[in-house]
Amino acid sequence: DVKVTQSSRYLVKRTGEKVFLECVQDMDHENMFWYRQDPGLGLRLIYFSYDVKMKEKGDIPEGYSVSREKKERFSLILESASTNQTSMYLCASSFSRVSTDTQYFGPGTRLTVL
Amino acid sequence: TQLLEQSPQFLSIQEGENLTVYCNSSSVFSSLQWYRQEPGEGPVLLVTVVTGGEVKKLKRLTFQFGDARKDSSLHITAAQPGDTGLYLCAGGDDSNYQLIWGAGTKLIIKP
Image (cartoon, rainbow over all chains, first blue to last red; front, top):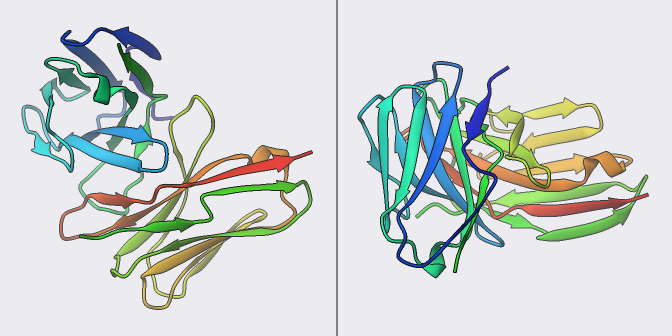
């Protein structure tokens, strides 16, 4: 079974702090994604990566950056956290770049910025 | 901009009842996926449909892709408390291989 793990289930940070969210997948998948999920808005894509050191902006990249130094690991960075970044963050991976591929999700990190 | 609208946003019914949730768009998609998300977990894929008019069944769940590939429905027969969760549809576009996500239908099945 594919396993996607995220470094924290819950995180509380203060405004202005730098925040790192880590995601690891164990199935040698090419693609990795970071989404945020807010009630009534569904999943919104922040960034995705289709290869090591490659990244592409999603729909809402402002205020975020990402890093993919190894194939299995994809990190989301909030350079200076703000209260409007309080949300559920979901990491996902998929085998290839075909849209019909299954996306496998981690359990999510619920981030609260005070 | 492609959008997927799901309805209803929230549904609470008794065990044993039937229900249908909808996923609609004005855009054509090359594929449509349905995911279920339980509290505290990430979404899990239920089904992928790729052909207009396609119907797939997963036990008591029936998924249909519209003939024009702009909409989809999920029908649950004799709902069980284990069906409780957030149901998300996601449209696939092969031109950019990203998924377009609906906002979800929160389903509660009461014993």
